[in-house]
Length: 315
Length: 282
Image (cartoon, rainbow over all chains, first blue to last red; front, side, top):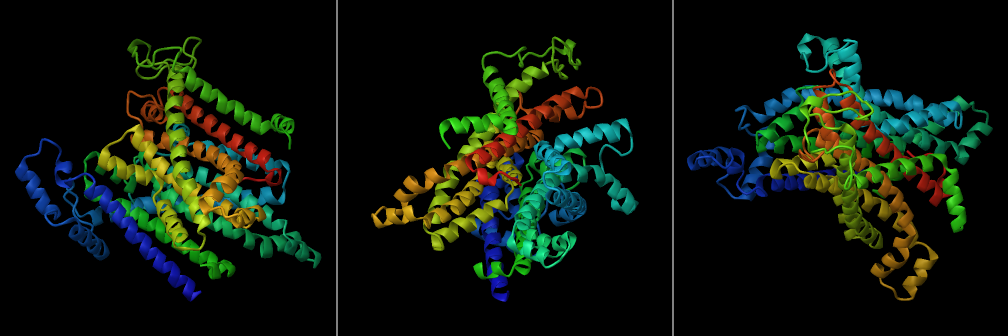
């Protein structure tokens, strides 16, 4: 396990380095001079020069890359040009919306998908199975932002149970904050739960067909015991993979959903920064999201190496 | 299965036929819109704004008085074009990479390709689009590139996995013994045998591409006005949804039915190609 972990760790580090180079080149090298890009075509030469100085653009790209990375490692993400505040502070503030939103949606999608998938697989061919498959087929086809608009129409505009958007802040209490995130989390969770329920069903059907399940039944375990001790445990490997992948989609999906609900999270920050040409912010937020995705997938790899020892030897 | 058997099996699969009909319906609408739409989507008739569905305007009109049915027809063009080209990019780049990785399985080239794949997977299409837009601005072309890049590892991974098992088959062995090179074996023996898989995955990525395009143009990173696109129509509808829900409902339904149709068709194709798998697609 140690060898496997080290190997994965090395590949994690390598991925992060390559990703950071790609992001740096895309955002700082490709547009030519970021300072004149950020200020637009009507900028005065001395303003551009001042911004170049401020952003540390007067050194070569390699040195700039090194400065950026060492800054990131120390937690210094630079200063936003438009907001005149530390990017790290802005991200930290907004992370308190995006991260709970993604986790809320992930929890919800798992809580819906597991029972639905298990029900469909164990009662294969029944009306339950048909219902789960039908609903999930629809669930993967519905764009989450459109679903979000529809539930806003019903629950916020018509029934007035929720506010249509915005975030009151966590200082108003946990319940108030969660209530504001409920509709966004449901919209994010819907397609994910549909995918996960289908994965759960097919993974479970595959294991229920295996010989060891028959053996377990033959030695006198009840269906429920077989399901819990043998089938579910083996079905978890593909399910875990999908949960890991989903986390990245949830973070990215949150970017769109935050826009539907006017939530001041990372997604809104990215779009505001794009429209204000604040490249420094875009660069750091994208890097942060990629970092999160890579680290989560690393954790998933380790998790299923722990569940399934055969995977360790394959590296 | 003979040719007649294929057609019979296809006709008897209700979900496949439903998917096929839905998909053809939207393709037909997109093609027809090049020659004819009930109303001109470029003409604004403010006096007819936000009308409810009627015999004249089947899906009603939007806030500029444009006919929503006509806009959905033209929007189908954008969605289909973006998703189709993006799948094309994914296949053209991803399949050769996957074939090469399988031919050199376990060696350095394989390792580089697969790690590269993992890396691209770390950038969801939306993040790629955000980076491209931050630098080059928003457009349908940039949306295509973003979705296309994201498709590459999908096809590379699928191709490698399927090709790996074929490399162990007897007929590939005999081709090697006969002195054929890896590239020729890949093209002549491996590729034809994984074509079915690629077609099935292609329809699935196509439907994901339509969803992605809708999402990108909804947040303003895709097709720009005046080009009608379903995501854009939904973005415009958002502020008016309490006044005129129909302008949000129809473009959304267009997306749902297209994606549903493609998914059902993909499922059906998979069953037709490989009846052993006729069970559950995740």
